[in-house]
Image 1 (cartoon, rainbow, N blue to C red):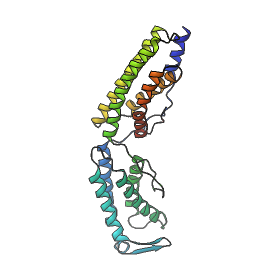
Image 2 (image 1 turned 90 degrees about the vertical axis):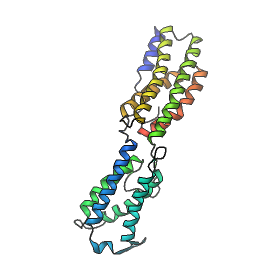
Image 3 (image 1 turned 30 degrees about the vertical axis):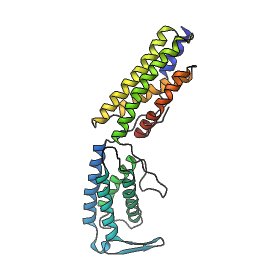
Image 4 (image 1 turned 180 degrees about the vertical axis):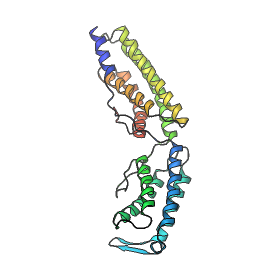
Length: 263
């Protein structure tokens, strides 16, 4: 009874991760970039023609406004073209966000009410969301990094986790047969948890591959993974510990994709 209670406590421990963020799918990101482009056009049209033809100078150098706006459009185009299965366009998004940050700082330094400011505010809100998608804040800092894990990368990681969890199921079954501290019912329960972890990975993979929201599924999977880790760390199970190490890389990918704390 004592050992059964110990196992129940281990399996009831709350996951160390916070709730998963509502991760945007590849399709969502493409829609967001299309909205950025549309709002950029409205912003460009609203700007004063005199400003467009100016060369702005400050202590850091000078900016040809018309050329800058053209380059800004080209950066949007490059990001749109780069978004493909297997490639998330992180470097292209970073280039766009850096250019947008120059405009953001310019507008915040001006007196309120200038032409195009309202249109810029709308565009800036899009860029703030885009920055979050790529793991940054807007306006971006000098040393900002940009990284988004695309749908294919998440799905591939979950495929690896499915197999790793099945291997873990086998090693746990073997290890626990020689562990006198674990009774039969507890043995069955933890092996079933490993099996369910594999099933959770499959469910998540299928939802991501179908372009469906998946934050709840990611939460459930990471919660189960935290329970498994707690159990394995609390027992001398060498083969299972080795099998668990194979599950860590896909879990790291999952944590990064949904901005969840890794157990």
